[in-house]
Amino acid sequence: MLRWSSTYTFGLLWLIIGSEAFHLNALKQDHLERMKQYDAKIRLAKHEFDDTSNETK
Image (cartoon, rainbow, N blue to C red; front, side, top):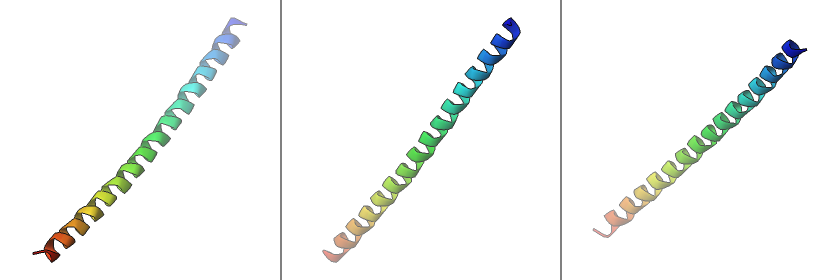
């Protein structure tokens, strides 16, 4: 009985750790995507600012 219980506990622990790792990877991917969008917005704003500053010269 002890052997089955420890195997079950180990399997359950492995499942929890695996699901947390999957969740953290999904959060990381989401964060990277948001940072790419943020960077693109900054580049666009910088480009528009450069265009307007060239018009005033």
